[in-house]
Length: 87
Image (cartoon, rainbow, N blue to C red):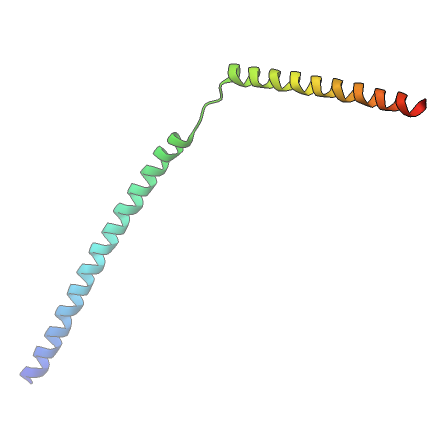
């Protein structure tokens, strides 16, 4: 009878240890999730970039000038080719 009580006591003690370990792990998980959530806000701020309107306007104007010059050159070559074929 004493041996059976001892075995059940030992089993109960192991269950308590497992519950304590489970509680500890759940608390660690909660802390990690909280830490990840707070870092996500910082990460978003770090990845956010600002738009420099002046620089982008200059780039756009230069690109438009290049495109316009290219269209002009293509039109000139096209007209030259058409005239050449007509004669």
